[in-house]
Length: 349
Image (cartoon, rainbow, N blue to C red; front, side, top):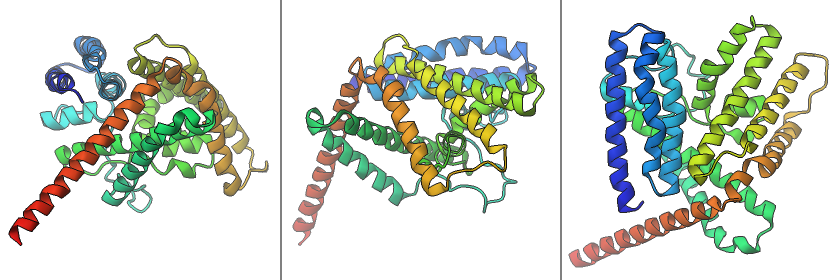
């Protein structure tokens, strides 16, 4: 990260802390509903501009995800007295819960049925090493088949998200001192689209979409199968629209609509899966077949609709360049640390 972005990070962190302090103050004094929402409007208007303070793509896109998607959705829930935020939280904890994509674990939940919480040190190290290997392969990208390169991009995105969200959860856990729900639950084992998006991929965002979109739409339609299907499809469409916003932070270009089409397609297929699963006598593929079919569908549709808005303007090249610089920095820092340790040990001997 350039020196200018380090200064931007300090400025953005200060602005976010001030905004959330104001939100906490207003929440304590206003009733849920329109009074709170009206008080939150200045913060809701300011947050989308803060990621633009970063020149580098990674901090701009990550802060866009945290502030424009996660924080804004949680503030909308808080305005109606829902969601994980509560004004009784100390200000550091309030800021962490408001801005990080984390979900507090339900204390009444059976720990045996709960998925693993976060990444361990070994898993994090393995994922970081795999990510470094993928980044090192990009030097040969000009000679790669297009679909091989897109597969590497897919793995890169998954590993990066796992590591970034695990780091955010670790920071939130340190501030809150409580257990948190995991961010991912081995999405490579998904046996259906509903399993992939609803129970394994980016679970904190799935929880927000259920609270903000799925449940209200389903309640408005009176529940039942039609309401559940409409709520699910609406959640996917809203996810697509928010990905359009995230892609705009990545490329600094207007939305193309392809991300919305990607998630609308997956939402329609997930609804069809639910309809098929409701018929108990109808055949279902075994997990050994369903899992590769699910992953192949996610990858194939991603190649056609998800990645083009990023690769077309060349944003992937900036991602690769920043990752290569990051890997080089870590390698040089590790080499310096090893050299320093050897010098100290040889001096003592």
